[in-house]
Every structure is written in C-alpha cells, then in structure tokens.
Length: 304
Length: 304
Image (cartoon, rainbow over all chains, first blue to last red; front, side, top):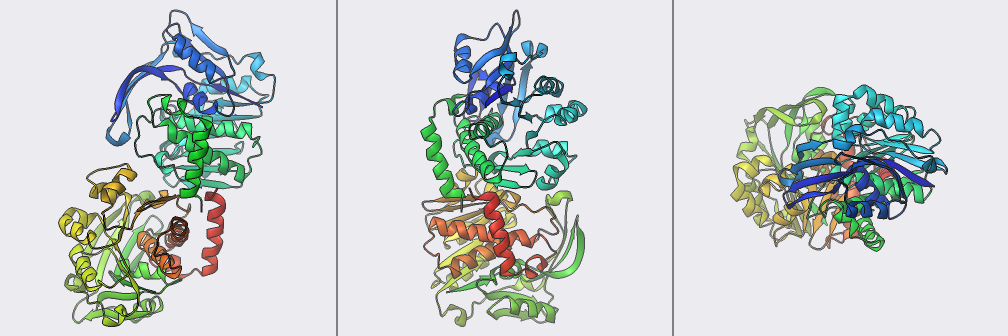
C-alpha cells in the first residue's frame, strides 16, 4: 500500500529554553514525512512559495516517494511561523504567523497518487480543505485526520463535517477536552468524539503518553521519558507519521489491538527522538537501529 | 516480613461531582491498610478520639494484623476533614480541617511491632513526627515516606531531614515539582530529589500513571483508565498500600526492575478500584479475583 499526506511545508523560527533557530524547515507535512519515511515514504500534497530552498526540496524528496502534489506559488513566500516555548516547554507562544502561499492552498491530489491502494493522512490544516481532499480521495482505504485548537474554536462546524468523512482522528488531550465541550475524563471525551464512521481515535497526551480507542478496544501507553528536551515542535506530527507508516507497512488496516499496541509503541519511540533536536534534526539523525534499540529499552521499562 | 504503618485515622465529609457522604471513615493510614490488606495486613500506629465508632474499629481490625499502636485520646475527637472536589475532580478544596486528637499525636511504635523483620511506611503526616518514628525504627529493613504540598511549603527543612533518614519516598507530580524548586520535567525532578540514601522514588501521576526511579532503573506505567470516578480520596494512599504490600509479600526488597514493574502494575489496579467508591468502599467490596481479572485486562491494553 501507500500513504498520501496533505499538510503544511513551512519555515519556523523557534526559541526554546534549550536555544533558538531561525527559519528552519518545519510544517506538519514535513514532520509527518520525516517520521514516516523509515517504513513508508509518503506521497506529498502541499504548497510552497518560490523562496523554498534547494536543501528543503532535497529534504522532502528524501523523505517522500512522490512530490508531484507539491505546488510552487510564484511570487509568494512559504508559510512562516515564529514562536517560542515557555520555561519547561509548557506551551508554545506564537509571535508571527505568515500564511503566505498557504493562504491560497487548494490542494489537488494527483491522479498518479490514487492509482494503488492508499491511506490518506490529513495533517492539521483548515477542515474545509481537509473535507475537500477527503472527497477527492473517495477510493482511499483509510482516512486519518489531525486538527488543532485553532480550528476547533474558529470553524467547529466545518471540522465536524470533515470528521464525518474520515475513518479516524488524531488529537491531543487539550483538543479532545475542547472538542468534547470540556470533558476532562479522557474515556468520556473519547466516547463523545467517537463518531459512528470512526475506526480509530488517537489521543496524544504529550509527556504522559497516548491512548488509542478502537471500536472494541482501548490501548494506553506511557511516553518514553526524555530528560533533555530541545524542541517539541512537530512531536505530534512525528507521532502521527510513525504510527501511520507502521500501520501501512505492517498491513494493520484491520486494527487489531495487538498490532495497534505495537504501532503505538513504535510511534512513541520515534516521537521521543523528535524532541531531542531542533525542527527535523532529532529524527533525521537516527537510524532504524536506534529506534529498535530504544524500543527494546521502552519494553524493559514499560511492558510488564 | 511485616509492614508497620504510621498515619492518620479520620472522619471525612466528602462532596464530589458524583455525590456526597458525611463523616465516613478516612485518613491516610486507613486507605493504606485497606489496599495493603489483600497481601500483607499492616501493624498500625495512629491516634483517634473517643468518638471513633465500633464499625470503624471493626474496619481497621479487619484490615490490619495489629492495632496495639493505635491510641485513644480521651475527651478528644478524631481527626476530621471536610472538603469537595471540583468538576472533573481537578482539585480537592478543603472546607474544614479539625486536627483534634491528631494535634497531640506522639506515635510510639510498640516493641512487639519491631521484633521481626519489617518495612516501615510513614504515611503523610508532620515530617518531624515521621523523623521521630524513623528513629524509633532503626532496625527496620526499609522505610518509605509519603508527604504532601502542605509540609513541603510549611516545613521544608524538617521534611528534608526526614527524607535523609528513609530509603525512599512516594510523592505525586505536583509535589515533586514543588519540592524540586519548580522542575516540570519529571526525570530531572526525580534526579534532583533522589538522595544518596534512597533506594526508590515513586512518582504518582494520577490519571497519567506512575514513574518509579531506582538506583539504576526506571519504570513507567500508564494508569488503568477509569470512566466513572466516584471519589478520588485516598487513591494515592491506596497505591502506596498495594505497592508496599506487594514488595513485602513477594520479598522484593532487592528492588529488581521486573519485580518493581509487577508491583507498580498491581498497585495501579488496586488504586483504580479505590476511586470507584466513596471512602474505603471502592476497594473494600472487591476480591483478589477482581484484582487479578483487571490486572489481566491492564496487561492486554498496556503491555506490548
């Protein structure tokens, strides 16, 4: 099978308690692909401006199996985000958001992407666009949608509509609370959010791990403890990329619990590397052997 | 071996989003014993007033192997706490605290308690008293101390001194953050708090599970997800009681990681029952078979 992924390609200027970086490669699609590439390089759908540099093109080429769906808007700049993390990485404060080319993003999924069996991943973008892409990909085997607080607050109806047209969502604890109308008990929140069309709901809990709800099962894992966090940007997208690539490459489309547990453990480990470097670096420098090694360590500290 | 436990015996009036109860049996020693009694009934050291009723005496007799160390202060009432939990059980708000007999608590550990090999558990009380009891029990095999925000803020020096005289502590995430001077990364907080005399540090994370730090290992487990929480009072004491009783009854005093993982999983399950009823009821109504059943369920959702 294959993965088709739609999301943002961006430049990020990031300040964290561990340092700062100017205009490094970021964006949900970038982080997703970076993590997925070990097992299943995705086919990308995105948009950049004509400022998107050769090293950045090289990077996304290396982490994907097709970039025909990435368009360049002439005379526009690429999406730019500038922000910082407060002490102890409590929260991300946005200083600048320039949508630039992304404001005109009208994704078209290339015909060539849709020839084989494929899984569609809708990274965190405007739910209206997510719905439009979902409709372009009616022949996909599975659609997973990511979202964030911004869309839950500003376009809840469009988000609900998009959710009705996918097989599963991946959100974090705070988003689940917000989207369920203030439910803090995550089992109740998940029950409230689990639509009849869903096969899976992935609830990311940051340094507290992950809970995954299926139609007839539940999985809960702690995070892999990381002492020296450098930059948490993209950790959630990395989790999603690793998780989806594991599902795809191990053909776990029937979502059996043991397979989902293994996928969650694998994604936990890949995401744990993502916070250990700025931008894409934490994951880009590691090998499958590193992942395997830490996965064994994870088993020894968390599997009983 | 045996467990000697020092702590409070109290009446609690509790209001939670699930209901309310007036003057039910509570206190750290009560909840600790309630959870420990399945595997290793502790020898109790505590104090009550002459209002302590026959049903309450029956209860603590049933959950302990000795109550010689529980004294009755004539003309005094038992410790009383009244409070409520906010929506979603976010935090406990104290409305009334009457120390009563507890204000004059000068625990004396009976000679008979100290004849065999034993583990001493110092439930959450004034650290000066904890230190005094630790000194009475110099021949104990192991001393574990519990504490809370109140002592960390009001008597930090006494707490530090008590911590220097024990083999391990059990605290929650918020307390660890406070005690470490604001460290939110729990690995760093644990490193800062782990004294040279420690063999173990147990970090409770509520609905997010538990991390356990040994001299050369780490264990991390998620919580067992509970949908319908009735009353979280005593969940931490219950975790401690179940954990310590597992250590004691399985002779895990050498703290090997696999044994600690099993102890943590067992305590996670017992604590998950504690929140499903008011006061001691959640645990009092279950059998070892219930624990075993849920432990298997826990394994299937969280062990990979």
